[in-house]
Image 1 (cartoon, one colour):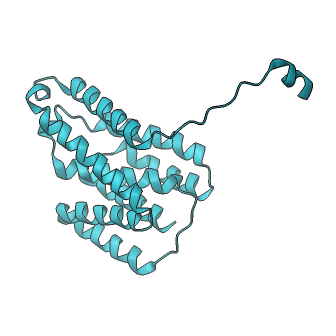
Image 2 (cartoon, rainbow, N blue to C red):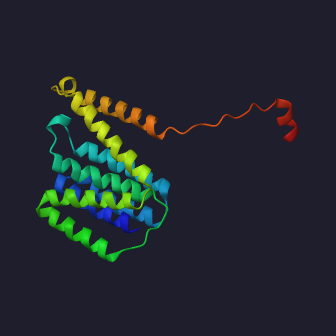
Image 3 (cartoon, one colour):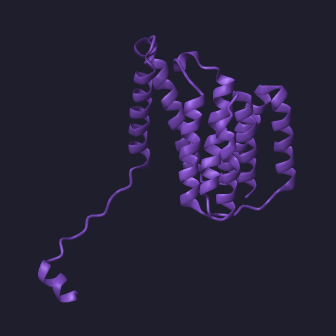
Length: 199
């Protein structure tokens, strides 16, 4: 629950830094759905939360982004989604929780501090996860950034946001297929007569 509270506070402060309004009203409902262990409701609310962020946070081109505002939204949102869907309860560490809250408050005035603190919470999550998962996630983000940099000459054009979104989505899907595709075991064909007998 500690990571979820950290993610919730980070999403609130990050949203204020980015100048968001509507998404912040959904944070209390996300918190209640997590407390009630309603993962399906949480996921629906998070989708609405993400859509409202897209509605308010307009981007003309990914190459002209305000990185502080972008990371102030992106990192807490990833933390919020992951912490909200996790079923395993971690030990609540009041010292860590208080430290992150203090850094988030300082980050309201010194925004790079907020991004660093949010990324620190991200690292805290990985410290409780498998090394393979951490490596795959970090390497996938690295590949995505490299792809965007390499494609700048083609993607960086006026009104090219839609093309950039399609490119990032396609590249993300390809990376996900490479790293997260699980081998599907073959199921032997069951004769219809045997199935009827069993039924």
